[in-house]
Image (cartoon, rainbow over all chains, first blue to last red; front, side):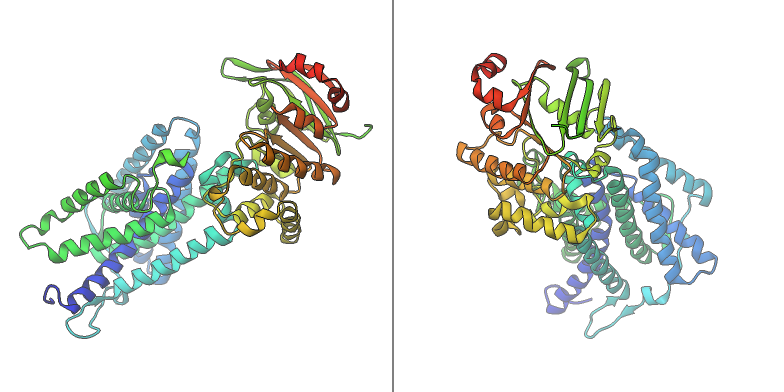
Length: 302
Length: 239
């Protein structure tokens, strides 16, 4: 442990914040993309992460090599996101938004209970390869958990790819157009259904990637493990500004930094209240900037 | 005049819930023609365009595109066939740059070479867009946004361009600019169906005009004749 306030302390905080923030950013992006195209806060997003972790575990137990396990979990998450859109959301398009929201809760509860039935409610260890769980000692008293490196590199690649997709490709532009003005987008030949599915697929794949890092941190998985990630993703979106990819990413890193700072500075007696403090700060932020850091109010969007 | 019909509406009836908006509207747009659809507020002009573009399913009646029925098809399908609507209130993608808006205009073409050629053409038609390619469209003035909306529609190489109130909310000088551009498009042979409150401007451009009142067709006439007989317009449009 470094002395509070020393340069080493700050570097350590930065490492931790970037590692954690990368996970939150990846989780939040999917929530933001779905919100952008559907005006839905997809609470089943966390359940997709849970299911993706179980897919990974099943593959691992069958002796599949880890890189393929990771790809399988990510692809599984994407497929599940697509299924969710098809089964739970598309049939109620055009209904009031609250119907979508209720369906997302229903899907989350159903999937979670399905996992309880299939795998029992207890936690299971998820053995990660040493490459992901090692802690490096780059010098001094610094700890560099390799998972932070993986998470940061993974986020950089995935989010960089996403940025390229939405600014440089025909489909990516179509997605942003459909998010902003679905009617005008359709009048140019853009199919909203296709773009929506794509948002689910990409966002869920990002979440599948994030949950690998999350699981490497926690070490075990269980059917209700999706709740905390989706909550973090939601808070990240609110902090950064809801419904934009930049907002989700910024919010993810800000939330990560905030949690790490509180963890580092709070006296040990109060550190258990860290999350309560995080939400307190969130409320204060929303009082000052109701649309989040990058956000604009819904009313201004029209 | 003997040209084949590009677009034909037969006995269209449309409604918003219990409220009837169109009562059996029939009209034709032929290749290379500019047709104006005139009428007071609430006459059903915008509704007609919404039905053509597939945004509103008619209660009864047919929409035919080159003789083929497209009634009730998805808006994206209809747009991909080449019926491109430039909607009321411009509806540019404000968070996207001017260039991105234009690129999306060419979405249906899937042809980079054609897209580049169209981009050159629309930038020649609206040179002011050239200096603003990298600005978010939301930063443009109302008139510039209208020009961008038309340019975006042109990027799709429309077979028929549907224009909904292109003069709405614009200063007279800007209206002139917009209509000069439309005249140029007409000279190039573009087929257009234009909905306008500004009857004088629309008649200056159109070959023929239809006048709608409370969802019914009350007059179908050559635009030239209407230009020469402003009284006719006054009777029907109440001005």
